[in-house]
Length: 316
Image (cartoon, rainbow, N blue to C red; front, side):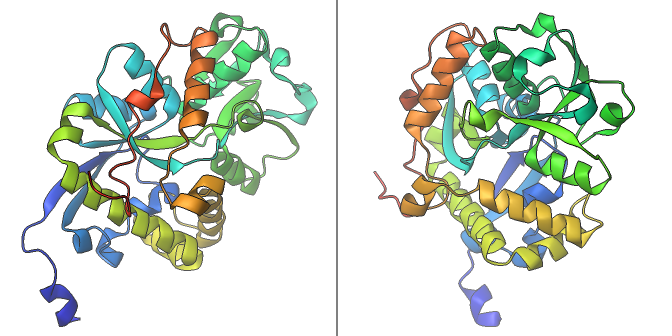
C-alpha cells in the first residue's frame, strides 16, 4: 500500500550476508526479500554471497566481500584461535542439528566404530567436519584415524554407493536423504554430546564498531523473517519453491522449513526472543574444542559474543 511505502527510508544501507551454502531452502528468511520486503522495511538492501561451509562464510567477511557471516561455532572458534577479531551478534539456530549417518548394515552405532572408516563431509570448512571431529575426539579418535571425503552438500549418494562408510550431515540433509530413499540408517546426533548452537551471525569487530545501527536493523529484519517462517511455514515452503535452488518440491520444503523453525527456538529464545545467545553453552563448546585439541588456546566467549544489537535490547 502507498501509505506503507511513504514510511520507508529513501536510501537503503547495503548488507551482504556470506552464507555457508548456496541459496537453499533452509535459508529462506534470506531469500524471500522480493516477496516479503522484511529488510527494505528496516532500510536494508540485502545481498547474499554463497559459500561451501561456515569457514567459507568467515573468509568472505575477512576479505571484505560480505558484512555478516552465517557460520557455525566451530568455524568461529577456529578463526578466533588464529587471532581474527570477530563478534557473534545473533544465534540463528540454538539447537545442534549436526549428525553422522551410516547404513544399518555397517553396524556403526557409536563414535568409536568410526575408526578406520571413510566419512563424508559437506566441505573441509563446514560445520559437518567440525562436529564430526567433536564426535571422534570424544571417542579418543583423531582426524587421522579416519579418512575424510568431501561429498558436497546434502549428498547421500556416496553413502548409498558405498564410497563412504558414514557421512556427516544435518537434520535437514538427513530429511532430504530419507525422502530420496536412504533406507534404514543409524544416526549419531552430535547434540546429544554437545548441544551447542549450530549457526550464528558473525561480523568483524571493525564492522561491529562502525555499523552498529545498520547491523541492529539487519537483525531486526532477519528476526522478523524468521518469525514469519515460524508463523507461516506453508507460505515459506511455497516461496522457497520459487527462490531456493533446491526448492522444487514444496512438500520437502515444508519439512525443511519445520526442521529449521524447530532449530531456531530454545528455552532461552522463548524467554528472551529469537537470536538470544546462550553464553554458558557457547563457552562450554569452546572449552570442549580446546580440551579436544581442535583449537590451540582457550577462548573467553564473553569477549566475542554481544547481545546489544538484538531487537528489543536497550541501546547502550
